[in-house]
Length: 196
Image 1 (spheres, helix red, strand yellow):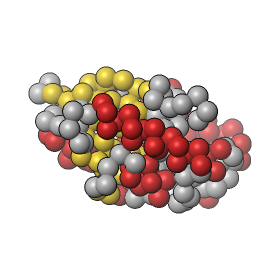
Image 2 (tube, helix red, strand yellow):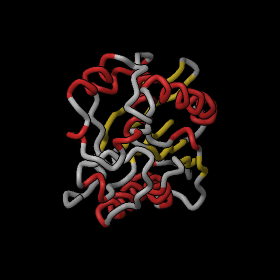
Image 3 (cartoon, one colour):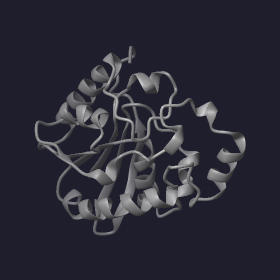
Image 4 (cartoon, helix red, strand yellow):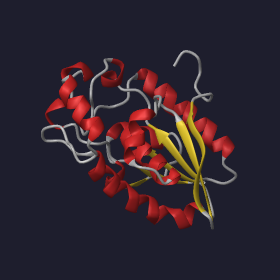
């Protein structure tokens, strides 16, 4: 099983800012969410899972609540928002949003396109598929790479990411077998306490 975990909350998340490659730590809510993720996955997995993480601090902090042994893979870091990192979503103009939604190869100034994101995430998935067919593999990452993984599992275009909502500290699961990947669950949040 391939288990995809979105990191816990940061202050930038709480403020509605685009984080991208910025590297803030989890806030107090995010630390509590990470602990709940760790408790849930340790009880749900039959044996300790292999745990991979984005190199960004918020993902590594979340992963540390799942396992003491975490491997870092650069390919799982968040999409780059370029000049908009650290700024509110509303700062991105309507024309830019429309172009971004219509063109997988469009990138915000200094940022990364959805096509480029998928091109880096897909090989990371292919590197894990054989292992995930035999044991649980947890990947702690971010909204955009997880949506790219969902598109890969479903065999659809990356533009599906505009039609998916992925909550903070959520879990999604991709079953892996000889027939290939299949989406088992998306955006699980029942493991989180009401106060999170």
